[in-house]
Length: 202
Image (spheres, helix red, strand yellow):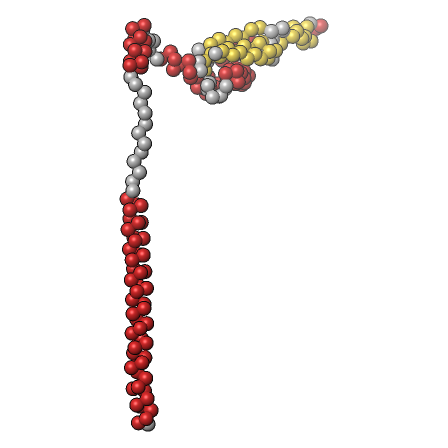
């Protein structure tokens, strides 16, 4: 995957821009940007701007999910001469000096490979024999079926036991409740005559 970005009619001489462009030829994009950020020359700024544009073009064409700035490297840099503006400076004794204001065009080409292509190249190619053996193995092996998972019934058993115990306790409580009531009634019947005796004595 490659992409191109251009800056045209830059108001700098091509000679001055080429000095800085030689520092980043053939280097990865991130490394080249670091070099340009710490280069004091005036040509470093337009070169960095053009390089960022080329990298963003490549990423936009391929997609951010497949291609990243780390995968890109500078393939080519062209610093071409643009039209020169001619001006004059008047001097003494009727003389005129010619001034040439030079311009240039910057062209940067960036190249990189998406992640899927890198993975495909690193994988070993299959031979015909290996492919045939693999197909035979897959044909011989039966399809595996998943066994149903065993359910642990420990919790259910515990709850059933405790429920049965509670029910038994309730039944026993009900049965004992009747006996208690009868006992109370009996004690009440016995206590009445004792109270009557006290009243009589008084």
